[in-house]
Image (cartoon, rainbow, N blue to C red; front, top):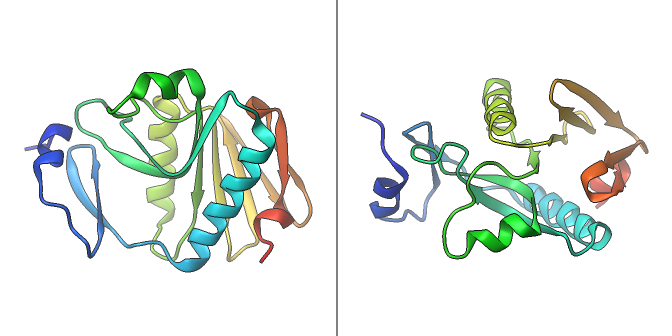
Length: 171
């Protein structure tokens, strides 16, 4: 029997793992490694500096892609400020406009593809995957994707800005 978001909130918190609700099922996730946290912080900081006041950019942005049975977090989420103001003390309903995922060894290709499909179905405009092992950033727009490497510039049209791949992997 699927678990609802309300039932999820009633569960005791755990310190050893992150627990998300995926399509009504509890899923244990490993805590992020230092490299991932550094990249999250760097990319979020760069986007905040360049995006303007119309956007809320958060590391580990929680969202409910499926209102009753799903609660997970984007490594970095970008949400229009008018949507952010509507959240109050509740949850973000739907997915952020931009979702950025930093791959870790625990991520499987299937998991990333499923999360991307879920996010696109819930309103995401741009889904970005940072792949440290390949030194590449893959940017997907429904229904196409482009891979950026080296010193390529990654456009973020909603934010009217861009980042260079080399900025993401600096440090």
